[in-house]
Amino acid sequence: MTLDAKLLRLIDRHDEIAAAMSHQSNLSSDDIMRLSKEYAELTPIVESIAELQSVTAEIAELGSLIDGESDAEMRKLASDERDNLSQRLPELERQVRLHLLPRDEADAKNAILELRAGTGGDEAALFAADLYRMYRRYAEIRGWKVEVLHVAETGLGGIREAVVSISGRDVFSRLKFESGVHRVQRVPETESGGRIHTSAATVAVLPEAEEIDIQIEDKDLRIDIFRASGPGGQSVNTTDSAVRITHLPTGIVVSQQDEKSQHKNKAKAMRVLRSRIYDAERAARDAERAAERRGQVGTGDRSERIRTYNFPQGRVSDHRINLTLYKLDKVLSGEALDELIEALIADDQATRLAAVNP
Image (cartoon, rainbow, N blue to C red):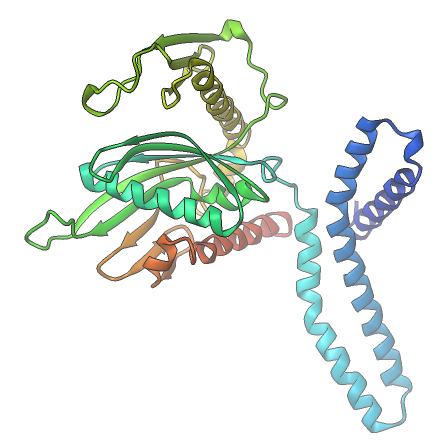
């Protein structure tokens, strides 16, 4: 099917849905919900197509005006206007093609963000805490809601592990490129010789799966109940409320002990388990596509070093797109994180467009 035929089909479908929605008395509530969702997804595409068609038609009209106009000043004005509109065409065409790219079904989902201290001991845990604050501030800036599912602190201001749910508009689509190994280079406060140490933290961003996405049968689960404990073996509470769930088919294990209620710990653990299983299934399904794109934006593999935060030089470097910002403080405060994310999204779009239109 040609591009023009695809565009016409989308416009026709948009019109069909609009006509159907104008007679909602003939539709079931499920049909209304389904059509409303499809209409909302098609509307930005149809608007982009309409803008492209409008500009193309205006350029053609100006061309006819220039050919038939005897007044030199009017020809000059029309020519300048045509040139201005012609400069807009490539970006308008690009936007339409972007809309036609296959969508990542998880982009509209909320996200489970898992953060763990890596190599580097106490310094790695302190860096993990820095990243934890960065993502929470970034979420606040974007108006997203953050729900803490689990945090294991070191007692020195560091974090061994944190798991949070982030909900809002376009959460997963914006955070998915954060998965990977984040490296920090700085002089620890305990370092008397002023030597720069390198440590790391690992970030995993998973689309938060709903029950409709992943069906988990009770027979596939082993649930262990135990007494929660804090740092150094300190008891968190005196009841057996901590929960460890093992998904037998995949071997994925999730533990949760932050709540005093066994029921609440189980519910939180199931949310994380469901998202990890969903992410694993996506990874397996997308393995071939990821291999084709390896070396571009990256695979999202958590073993892949993606970014370095260099404190002595005040810079942040993303190694996948060779982008360096000398805005370390603003990145860690969440203010400038969008500059990195926007660049990663643009690179991903360019790569996918090139694959469709070699």
